[in-house]
Length: 257
Image 1 (tube, helix red, strand yellow):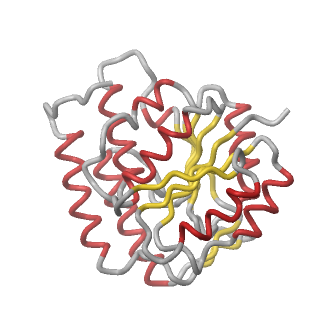
Image 2 (cartoon, rainbow, N blue to C red):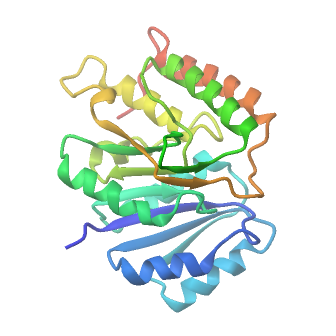
């Protein structure tokens, strides 16, 4: 029997990029998977596009509407909290453009099934021979610089924090990480890691680096229309400073667990 999973899909103005047939095709072969689309105050008709699969199969294609644009971090947070209400085994958030094919979900689930010591699986963009990782040169090199800065900020040897493919074990420990709003709008995964590092300091729980597995993706395609721009690089670095000050600086106040 497949482990049940709820996949949170944050959506903002995705009407022209949303691939309804691929979601429906995947759903037909994976009955244990439920999609939860979170519309982050879209203004382009994304809601109407999402209503199509929802009307056909409400339990498998649920929708959560945010009244105004909140940013990816809050959209993911609201979606994950809603996903926990269905008591899945795993919760995952996934980019709406399907740059990472949905077929990789099985490998993520199998990994957590086989490794009870793990709590999170992070997809990683790694250009290895025999893999289909297609990224523009500018985005690739800016991404590597940011990933290095994020790793240094966290004090954690993580290769990639920004890939939009993540899977979490649906445990009270993970649910607690989403109880409070994030301090950044976009760096949800870096902030989750910082919080996890902070709350485990001085406890008998294994450190963050021992409960996270980075999975090199076999396939990823740069989809046209991305909302990530080169100027967002500077905003991201400023966000890292905020995260360090909030969670990782010496004597930073520990947020409620």
